[in-house]
Image (tube, rainbow, N blue to C red):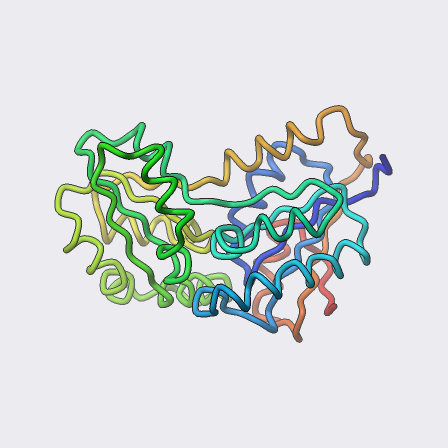
Length: 259
């Protein structure tokens, strides 16, 4: 294994930074290529057929260019729709990001769980399966919000989210799930709004899969060599917004390019 072979993180936008952070903490010297598919952003409003065809093709192109040791699909929507397609197309490990319904069910006392994601994610049969397997004795209420994705992206650009906009975005979930005590953040953008969501839904625990994904990456790369110093670059599929550069730098992505 080449010590400089990177971990490739893939997302439609920059929400996957919430997954990159815990991975950096576990494997600080890992070289990182973070690839937001900004040309096709946002994924949450795209059709399943389009994403199932598009994601494996783009990932194949990225793998050919950067020769990573593994791929992390740091996007719930892409994972719930295209994970199997990506694994079939690539000869290296592919780690997906799926809604953390199992740990949510383990934590819930009221047995009412909310799943907050994109519209595309919350309607997937994959989510049906997770709920049936791990939360059969729970009421699982789903809500899709494109507005929260935009608010998270804006926050990374330095614009403070409007508390009223956060509250309005999750009000349908709160109304539909009285007694909810655990909320699954089923979009990697949403942990970036953890404080704002806590203010809008006080007393509701938030669960996401980022720490588990980091542990999975560490397990798959155990014993592999790493360079002496960390490195990181962000590679966008469309011209990147310079307003994102400070946030990218905070996650160790000091170089920015376009694919």
